[in-house]
Image (cartoon, rainbow, N blue to C red; front, side, top):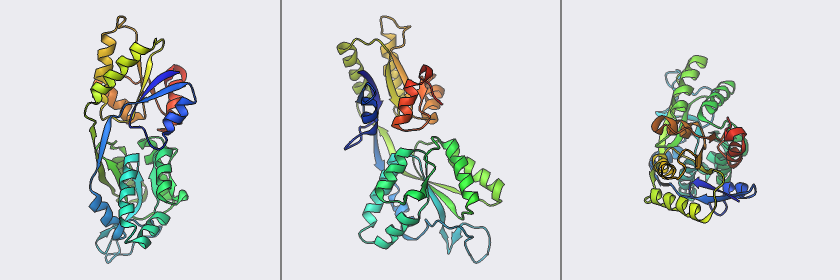
Length: 306
């Protein structure tokens, strides 16, 4: 069984990456990189309770009969955009908190809200919260650029009305909040805001660098490594610490010219961050941010896919 290091916290009760990779001859080793803290919950709660999130296909009536995406001073959102598991968790915590005292409003939110997602893992997490399956769309996009095109097409073809609420973390691609409004203005002649609300902040787990170093040292001591060890990067955060450890181990090797480790990024944001900030080219990139995407990437020709 070939070891593969997953730079993430292992999901409970089961982790889909562990399940799939184990069934294909790998030994998954999890090294937690990030810790997350929910923020701006009050703002999201306000949007839910005041009816801001309402998928509508007709123009909102307002006193000026213009194209404003507001009604009675309340900003209206035609849909939510979510591109990370942590944002789903933050939203889920808010829903759980509001449900006992506001059951009808939460039921309406779950049954009617359109949500754009970037991958199947995010979709599945939203299904577990109780959102309507047919309203969770875009999961085959795989990255922000493709999802942007999907949102633009869906918004225009369904004559949606309202802004878009983007629940996100501190570190994310700027493609969605810039490309979507620009293209929608060109196509429908109306301004549509992608309202970014940061619902969690992320930090590197204290001791991550030493934990990863110890993990690599243990592997080198216990196993005869015949092939480079794969490391899977799930976020730009913590990448600098991980690459420092890798570089240190490779330079200290008796054969420094031989690559001891291969890096697989979960998507283009992490891939580009690795290269632009540290000059390290990812050996593979998952075309879809999912267990299947990672497996296809590391087993693809030369380890590269997409």
